[in-house]
Image (spheres, rainbow, N blue to C red):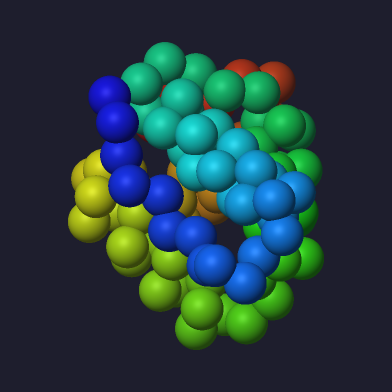
Length: 89
């Protein structure tokens, strides 16, 4: 499915690509499964681009409104699980 990804015009092409990759991994976690370490690495890169917690919440909220997928819950599960793959199903 196609979703609207929250991006900023001021970001570089690399930053936009990295943020889109992060949100696509969130989608993958909900639609099938995703490698836990890959998701956490993408989240760390997302945090390098969006370090402010209030901005993170804003982007997460915008994506959740568009897709119905909670980035917060997916990252939380990835942090707490020990399995290689996680699924939000």
